[in-house]
Image 1 (tube, rainbow, N blue to C red):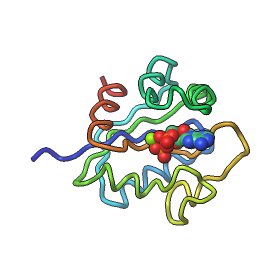
Image 2: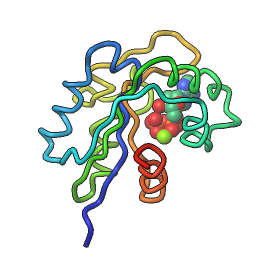
Image 3: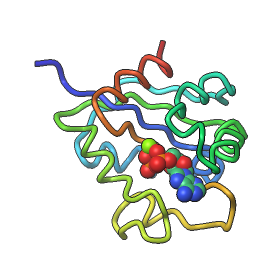
Length: 138
Ligand code: DAT
Ligand code: MG
């Protein structure tokens, strides 16, 4: 059986705040493997494809604007049940209520903006992981 893989993004807030290393360290400390990694400022095209499910939502424009505002670090991470495992490491979407011990709970906060800046993205299913890895590592 092939090892499961997920896409992790350290978002522009994480990169700008100098938290990339801490976030990668948590992934490695958990025992997952960093298979590939790249730093880039994503264009609207990749973000529109990445966030297609949110197109009709009120936070969509602010989300695309935020995600294209600076460098992100895209990471291909491997391990048994890593999709679910990284979502657990990341914590809930809202950093205010994300559990302490999680990346968003420990390192994130609400800045009162139109979009939540919550440091990381992690694929939410096998289908999303396959689609997103193809998008960011093609
Ligand atoms: P997640 O990143 O936890 O999978 P999501 O896919 O529902 O969350 O949303 C994508 C991103 O959009 C999320 O990380 C932060 C932002 N976001 C989601 N819901 C929001 C809301 N109600 N208000 C502001 N920003 C939101
Ligand atoms: Mg999501």
